[in-house]
Length: 336
Image (cartoon, rainbow, N blue to C red; front, side, top):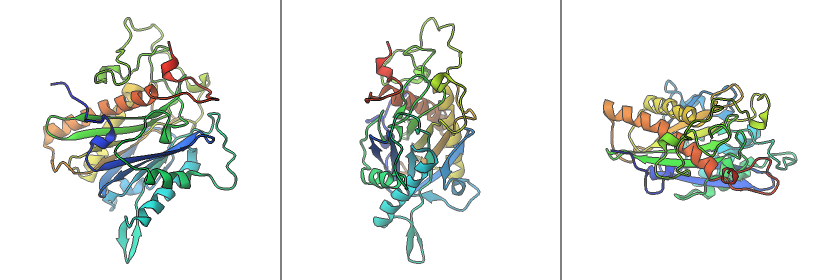
């Protein structure tokens, strides 16, 4: 039986999650936060060569931390890591966090992408605005949220097209849901050559990102490498960051495997990916809200679907991008 999307086709189809976006139009950058209703089991995997992160070491299965309270995705390169402090402040204000001798310490892992060269005004003065954007994003957390030119994807770019914030979900037949959230800002391309066809087309459900399928015949130049800005890429100027989530019950080690599997979606949706110039990272969250523990066969299906759902989310982010005055790259909808 073919897989179907969840009701919203968003990561919030995974029970127990809310998403908040915030952006600054002048800055051309923003923040997206994932907030579980209850602390979630979490891990991560980096496969890009130039990551920018906070609190990720604690997510390794061999370390003692078992659950987190939010995840922050941000633009701004290393400056964007301040976003997690804003999210942490909002959670502490709400009484959320690990209790340590009368103090609440919210655990907020974070990752950033590079969007400094996108036409926005980055002359922010002494301190960057990402802490305030993180606080605002946490305050905006809800079940519905914008895709495309929004949140952490507000200033994102890809090879030849604006990037964006994408999300997708898949409902498995056993009652488990998988959802992906991606801020797509890769050095590579999400479309085949210079066509409107997405590399992720084989995994599309319905016409969620145009319904065009793959081109036929495949262009002779399909395998050509087209870098962002059509120049030799430099380390740290790109990065696709994602969250893959499920309502299944997972151990921390199984969440690590889920993050690894979701990276297959990068490879299915972006050419090339996982380069030294990208900081590609996936956080994995398990809310356990379904109450379902997976057997071996169901776990294998979960990991396979994680890659497909992530690929779809990447394409949906670029597909949903909208134009702004002063853009240095066009949006997908303008490509003929």
